Length: 257
Image (cartoon, rainbow, N blue to C red; front, top):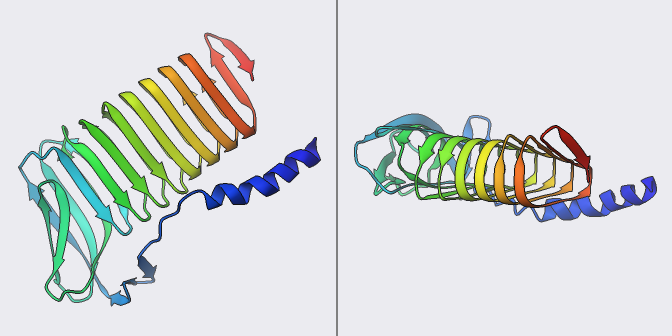
């Protein structure tokens, strides 16, 4: 049996990592310089943006960089950028989208975005690589993707939530939603205090832990890793792991599946 499991791991692990869909990262960071589309960006600075308008959706498309957002009354952001020439980039929020232009026509790169956005705002974020953290925001839609990086979402309430990372851990806390789908190619998934109608969570390589949560339907899958459900209730559930243990604990009773 141990030989069979070892053989399965040797075959499955390369396939899982190949299916992670790690996006190409056009911004190559080396030391204190960044290279984009063959152009070396030698200068970096922080741009502060404020906006009192209320847009339905906040959109960020970045080649790479960490993103940390918190719900508030209006836009108040600090964006770190890399540029070819000093003060070459003009950055703005246009209809809720973070948009940049350069005087020289050279490319630029976003290194990080942090700050406050209006609490009632939908989210649409895509980055080649970077950690993403979003706190205290609610809206209609929630779409977040990163090629590689950790994800942390706390007190975010949306009817539908979809997010994925090619490689990184996912932590979800205090979430209310109708439908939530999360995927990581390689990383652990931790869910705490979730209320959902449909829960769909998947990891190629990693553990899945769910605490104090409820869902009408739950579908949790791990290619290689354990699945643990504690003090939670699912009306219907499908828990599956290629290699690992499944433990569903509810009302003081523990059943290893």
